[in-house]
Length: 205
Image 1 (tube, helix red, strand yellow):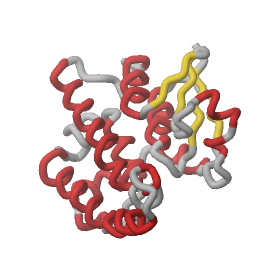
Image 2: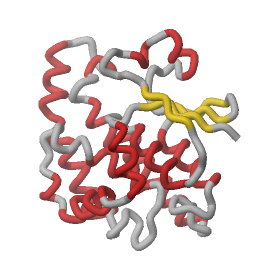
Image 3: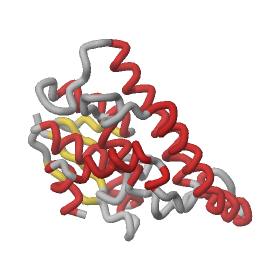
Image 4: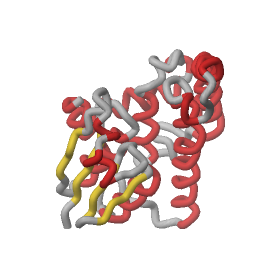
């Protein structure tokens, strides 16, 4: 099996990259230069017409969307740190958390720079961007108070939710959110920084 990750460390793609490093699976990494809009190039659009990262090519088949990629990798590496729990309910809880990050938290973050996805009005773009510290803060408050079990997202065992939350926590300072206001998330962030897989991925950035 050949795995090829097309991504950028400064994006949510860091979650998939870290999961791959945790998995022990062999893979190739192709950096997508977001600053120069490589994701919009004709070559990359053949891989992912959404013009977004990450994209994981599996023997010529293309997977997109972080929750789907992470779940697939967890299935591929049942002996690794990202292995899925045996319980169907526990698996569903992982999917629930990751879906929230994808559908709500990431979207709140995107309002800072991607307002054109929702409106062609520049005034609306400015208002969306201005609200990001509030909307991201509300998301972190919900995670801190209602979702986060600690020390890892779902308790004592590391899972695919952990690199996902970590990738998003890397954005908080830029979004005007003080991570120390959320002790569980801050402690999680610190634990993640100590993991060899995280150090490996961040070194590429």
